[in-house]
Image (cartoon, rainbow, N blue to C red; front, side, top):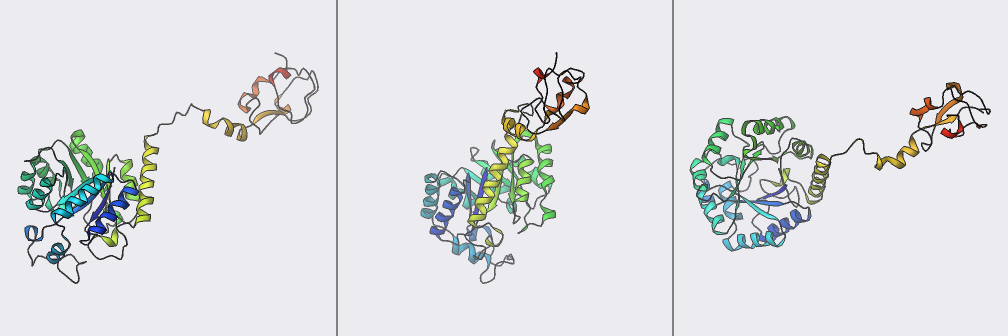
Length: 329
């Protein structure tokens, strides 16, 4: 399943948010993901800022782009209208409480909150939630600790690398197999793709992930933390199409012995036994009398030995397709 990550690229505009849901829906993503930031609940005003914040600090940015409860409700209802699942990352207990009141059941724990054990314990009060646990900056010990706290039956463990964009050598596809070996069938597995291309996601699909997340934007030139490495609409559409086609390929078993689909192709490209030269009536046929040419609607070249040592019943012209009734039994 594809998760279209809106993040904060809406820049606080409800209209932008709804249009981004349209894009995700049109591209046939199954989930669209937002982030619920409540500045005063999750960060100090003087906390360090990522490099992409230039004209305002992170506290100011989160305060400015936040939606009201009424706007969040419109976003959630619009997702239902578009038949796409609403998923949201939380960064505080207050954000969790707000989503619970709004009836949200799909919650993502972002990489920076994996060690926030009080938040994880709070999540346990609602065991019917579907939890997506991101692991982009966590050690195995930290992941084990988080999973030891969470008591939910429906947990998706997401491999990602919290670098934006993620360098090719640090994607960590090997972690997916290690997760599957370490935790088995207890959890589902996913991949948050922070690269700028398709390759990592396609590889993760081969490794057996069920969820693939990719950031989307109207334009890479937009302001904010996500736009520069996100996919624009046309690119995201191609990305989704590639994933769905790849999934069909991986899940469609082909029977190598079923040759019906190739009946016409075999006739066009395979070779049949033909007379290499004029074969007089009564001649005992040897390999020097035979040749092998297209079309493939005669006796197969692989069956040429049928004719060897047998006498021709009639004159056989050069390049004439050999038939079994042309020779004595």
